[in-house]
Length: 184
Image (cartoon, rainbow, N blue to C red; front, side, top):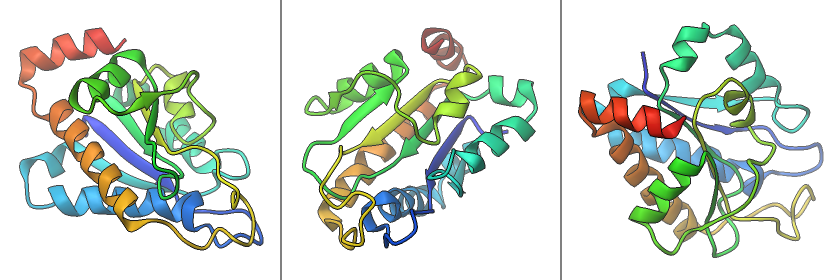
């Protein structure tokens, strides 16, 4: 049983190479997984690449609909990375207690209202605390020009994601119970 699901979608729209939307998010998920692979944290997180985000969140909706409700309710968080390879400012949205957790560890991160329409949304609908990492719209969105990302931005996003994951998974049982209550 994982405590956290870390995910991103790997599909793009027809005609778009999808470097930022969303090879960037998938690369960050893989990098976080690589960084925790040889640590005890790896046993407490699942790393998931979803398909079908662009045409209706099909992969994440299927994942949530096929999971047992008690399995979903035992998750501390779902972290979603989407379009994180372009634009300087990293933004987070989602469950208020999780956005506050990020801002407490990384004061230069801004929050955005709403939870957005990406792969974390099906998790949020069933009560799983979510955190959505995003760098905003950009001119190459869903075009044939979505061909490049800034590796430094990917590294920065990975580091923030790792910090959040370590905070979520580094808590002991009593801290975890109180964190879970505050997340809901």
